[in-house]
Length: 205
Image (cartoon, rainbow, N blue to C red; front, side, top):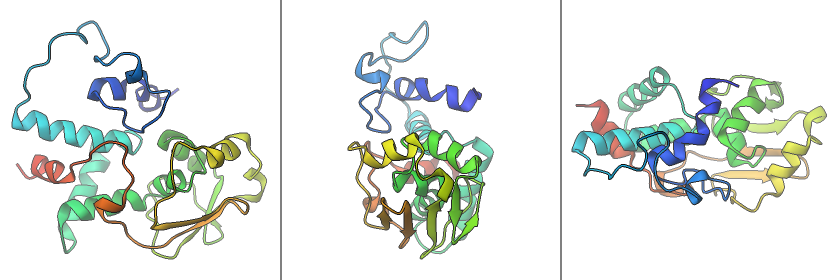
C-alpha cells in the first residue's frame, strides 16, 4: 500500500473533520488526533495555522494530492481570469479521478484514482489512465465495458452516502456520464466547509 493511500485513515483525525462524510470515518469513534500526543489540549491556531489547515483539508479531500502538484493548480488558478479561489476549485473538480468519484463509479477519491490508474475509464471513447487529466465541458466519461460489472463499481453506484451534483449527468445503467460545466464553490457537495480563499492566502504570503 502506498504511503499516500495508507495516510487516508489518519487524515480525518489529524484535521478533526469527517472529510468525506463517511460513516466509517475513524473520527466518529475518536475525535482527537492520531499518535502519542493526539489527546493534548489544542491551542488556538495562528492565522498561518488556519490557512495551513484549509490547504490540508482541500489537498486531503482530493485524495491527498502531492504538494508540488497542488501548488501548480494554485499557480494555474492565479494565471486564469476571474476569482482565484473559484478557479482552484474548478481545476480540482475537473480532475478525472474527481469526476469518477462524483459520478459514483468509485466509493472514495482514493479508489477513484486507483480505478483510473488501472485503465477502467474512457473519456470520449478513449482510454485515459491519468487521474490528473482535466475533463472539459461536455466530455463523456464511461466505465470500460469489461469493468461495468465489477463489484466495487456496482457498490459505489448504489451507495446512498452521496448525491450526484448538478454539473454532472450520469446514467448508472450504462455506467457513463457527462461533465456538463465548471462548478462554482457553492455547487460542490463538500461534507465539510472548504475555504479555498484561505488556501490562496497561504500561497500568496
